[in-house]
Length: 361
Ligand code: 3EB
Image 1 (cartoon, rainbow, N blue to C red):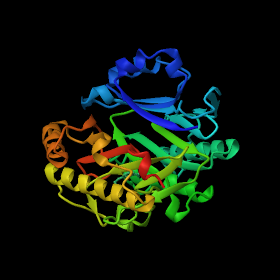
Image 2: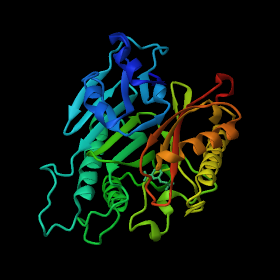
Image 3: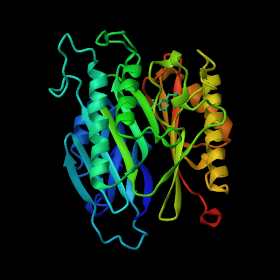
Image 4: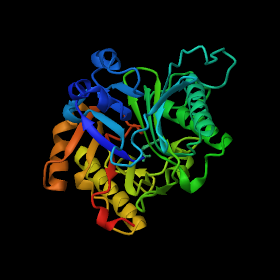
């Protein structure tokens, strides 16, 4: 069964008929902190994350929704919803979407004074261990995309022995599980994003499937899993995008993309420079995906962008830079979030569906 990706406002999401909700594999949605509780009541059956992140603009596409595609033949089969450990998931015959939230004060986490492992590292390990166990149990071996959100991503809460930045603690936990569970295949890591929110538990969403995925890298950037040690003792386990063919339709899941060339952050304190560099990186990832695909099936200018903005005051500059780049208004949601390097002011992600069947391989 195929996949279809839609973008809706929270109000539209709430007003969809049950028949529509029954096709939803899952969703990632931004809601002002005050709205999170209300949003969570939308449908207990749909695994979704409602992130308390201020929507600065583009609320009409604040929810990214992954639907099981109706146009395929075997659509009569209902989706299966389930829970395992702290995970809630939904799947069809080919795809599984799941979410897990772990409070760092959870009883699953040991915070005795002698424990050298920070609460965030432990939460990360528990979450990823549960995710890979579920995927092994249910037979969805390939992860296409991870969404990672955590509080205070640039802080160092003193909980860690070396007083590491929390994003680096997260990277240690993630890498430990990838290695332990045989998922650190170098070239074939999933696409991902990792953002900081004002508060809340470690929250991870994931999309996995039976079809293999092709990891896409950005020729302008060092592979993140090969970053030098200056960015932390363990490198981030993700690739720049994953290309996957689901029911003959090509999909490109583009990771959080920022103003990094080689491994270095460029344009510190320059929001226009960072936005331009990020767009060049996004274009480079899309060209690389089209090269691997063997045809121009992906077009960045048709995307719905998820734009993470560190300083709300930068919104207008970012929008202007994007308008200049694309020479037309693009669909985008802008949310306030912290990026995983202190100097980064912006990160952009997108999911692309192939624009033309004619060019398909
Ligand atoms: C970068 O390119 C920016 O740790 O999963 C982007 C996307 C970034 C995903 C992750 C980090 C992650 O290194 C940061």
